[in-house]
Amino acid sequence: MSQALTLARPYARAAFATARDEGAFAPWTDALAFSAHVAADPRVSALLANPELGRDEAVALLAPEQRSETFSRFLSLLAEAHRLQLLPEIAGMFDQLRAEAEHVVKATVTSANALSTGDLDAIKAALRKRFGREVDVSTAVDASLIGGAVIDAGDVVIDGSLKGKLARLQTALAN
Image (tube, rainbow, N blue to C red):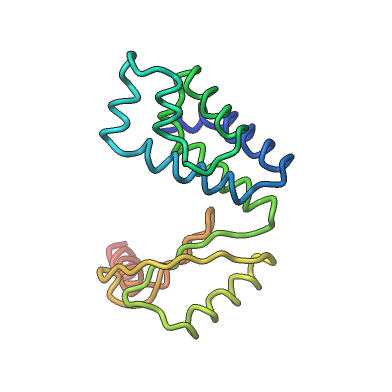
């Protein structure tokens, strides 16, 4: 995994620089997300490993219908370097670079039950205050948390779940 991230980093930075220069973050984000999703499919991944698959066929397979010529050249470059399997990592790093450039923190709130709009707004406001940036929040539900929520905002994880509190209590009692 870390080797894939190391290999993907220069491509993600190049894609980000190109998108920034073109002023086209949204189209590049969409195109990379599409290509990464297709490349992550196990059947497509096996096909990409086939040495008989040509560069143009690989690009046609992975490129969305609505794409810029620059994006097609980017995919072609990846195909030539045998790096198409890195598209999921490249897309993830691109999203991180874009969020940093736009001063946005991406956070995932996983709760035991679906959150109400009011609760979600309160969490967004608290995270905005804590980070001093705009916050892009996605939600997930995990019933095994029993109650509460876990907020994952990159390097910061706030575990306010009942499951996490019970685990900390168990550790404290064991010591």
